[in-house]
Amino acid sequence: RIRRFTEGDTGRIVALRGDITSQAARSAATHLSARPLPLRLCYTGTVFRAANTRKGEQYVLHQSGMEIIGHKGTEADIEVILAAVTGLNAVHLENFTVSLGHAGFVKSFLRGLDPACIDSVKSALGKKDKTGLKKMLKECGVEKSLCEKIIALTSLYGGREVFNQADKLCGNGAAREALKNLTTVYDALEKAHIGEKLSIDLGETRGFGYYTGMTMEIFSAAGFIIGSGGRYDNLVKRFGPDIPAVGFAFDIDKMIEALRRETTPPAWRASDILLLDSDEKTTAKLREAGMMVTTPFESMDEPQAISYAKKMNIPHVLMKGSNGKYDNLNVESGKKQKCTMTEFINGFFK
Image: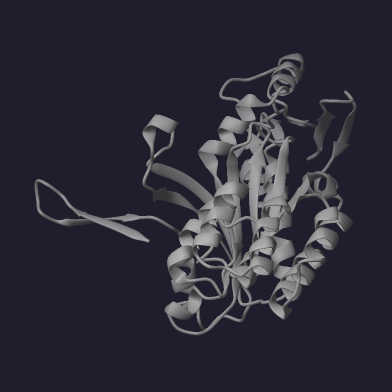
């Protein structure tokens, strides 16, 4: 969504981006359309949202996300979730939960309802408000058996046992197919050894009109959302070809807040190597190989270098030696060995 307003001094129209995913979808349908599918795209940028400042909400959000465009299978869903978890591990955020849902599962039960009732029912479902939901469904004239199933959705959250509970509600092909789809994703994530980070919420209605399949929300230990995403197979075709897609985005500010609340501060790595007494050519070679390199502005002796590296969590101190070789000091073990630059690079990545 794009929010537009008129700038007071010039009268120009100012557009504020409400979403980056739609831009990725437009790119996939236009100037990237000749590329082979699937496309794997990533981005970082700001978006603007309506906010309740009294609740501490922000108008400007800093997002970083990933989209896989052009693959309909669960393999893409699984890759997106694993990428999100890998990102959280990379910043050393340990306490989080990935809540999985499926838009198709919820929609299958609400499909026959009066469109005028959908928003109210969806809101009550999201709040797990059984009493309010029952009242709304009665006012909408929903038959008793369907009413009971919709109310039961408010209790379908927890661990793997939720799948068995949900299976008893599946009376149509769409619900059963959605449940099968999500079970496949969940099984794969358990095999990837992140089962302890997973939860299921089959009554989740966030993005009801936008998402078509698997949905996910990532919660911090404090209970606020630090990332979200899901499958949205109907977006790209608004700009051209009918192509399936799935993705997620982190709320960077919320991630930083979650890190600040961790009981154990993360051990940040300032760099991979502290490089002493070397030239720009050597520094450039290491950086081109994919390493983060720190070079001090002033000369350091070995004890000073070790002290600095320990404080900055830098694992290697590399010093120029004799005969074209280098002294590689492992900061943690204190062991030093001679090597050529090529040997150091190969050994580092091995």
